Image 1 (cartoon, helix red, strand yellow):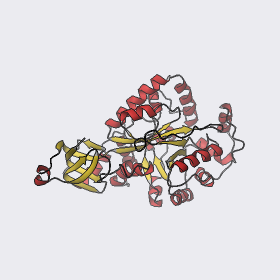
Image 2 (tube, protein in one colour; image 1 turned 90 degrees about the vertical axis):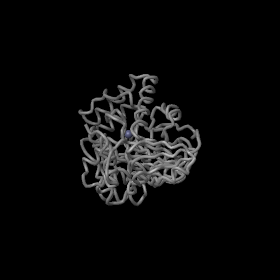
Image 3 (tube, rainbow, N blue to C red; image 1 turned 90 degrees about the horizontal axis):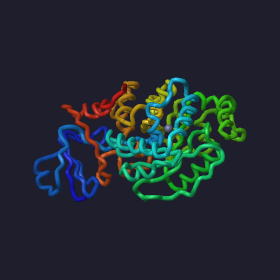
Image 4 (tube, rainbow, N blue to C red; image 1 turned 135 degrees about the vertical axis):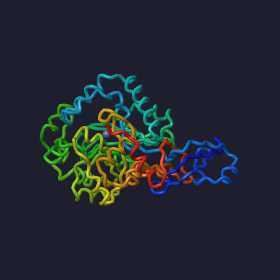
Length: 389
Ligand SMILES: [Zn+2]
């Protein structure tokens, strides 16, 4: 691959460090140096210079939570009749689509992700279809095989492409998956030293079921052949339930966390677990937002995901950042950009490879044609680059 010197009007090294007229020198796909261009520095280099333009060059974004497998459901879902209806609608509509259709839409989703400045994803696959397309695409990240229910057999883990696209396991959620299955999955990922992901504290239905052990969700599980009578419910809260199962640690990604009081946030913080925020999906499906201010105050490591095209209208992390910025005007743009870059890389265990521009990291670069006059405007412009309609 040789030496390539990428040049742009602005280079975002990390959310708090922006170089005007910067360059990134890449050797064999790995970042060698980052700096501000001076004529002698460039002219003495023997590598090829790629001038991107006067816009902004930055480390590719990390979408920590998505379901590319559900991309074919874009625009087909009923989202205004409540979460319970949406879940049943999703199961029914997905069952009507064959694997070829799901795969074609997933491949289109991957292209959309790559085109929107993103270089890595946490892909949650409950059907197990998207590993091949991800490997072919060059998209980095972690591919999670997701399980739910109370009687599942989890095949032996296989390291498919070491160092390239790690494969791990995810539990769906505490209201769909038995504690035995969740702890088995977490133990496997702990042995493998890979991240574990779970949807947590997302819906009113989950809260009601976990804190009573009864209700319409229990009936729904029964209709799906899942018997929850031995799950040890009720529990005080989803977060404390996960703590009691030994699932919380710094390799666990808790997705959504819409229902958490300060005691829950303290438990998450003490465990070192990451929270992945998907606020556009939360607004669509639940009409509420997570307590991001409280999470930041408590010191919880945060990252961002778009969730799937079954609940949002794009897989762009720019759209997610812009939505957060408009919904939480007190959160600094740099903090939001950090969630979308190094926060995601840390959650996926990829922070030595990506998430910021640093020597030794992979040269997964993205470029936006943003014009600005001062370094202080750059990250804010990136965070506002998305659409919120
Ligand atoms: Zn999800």
